[in-house]
Picture 1 (cartoon, rainbow, N blue to C red):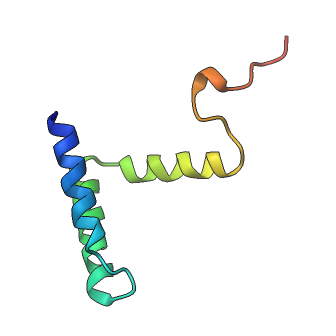
Picture 2 (tube, rainbow, N blue to C red; picture 1 turned 30 degrees about the horizontal axis):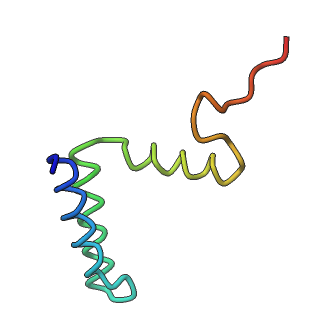
Picture 3 (tube, rainbow, N blue to C red; picture 1 turned 30 degrees about the vertical axis):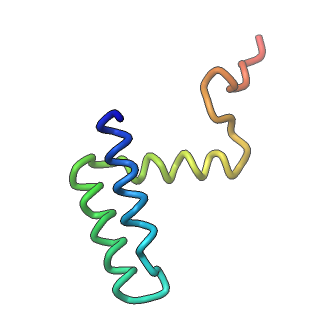
Length: 70
């Protein structure tokens, strides 16, 4: 199993145990997101922007993007 898959599996396992309705769960997710942002600055904002674009109907990939009319 590639290292990325092992990391993703461990992350999903950790997230499954978080209760976001509790203060401890919210603190845990905050800590996790802070560590992700520290390791890869801007990645969370980039992902949030992608989600917002999909919410308004923007295509997922550049190959599906509408072409400018000539």
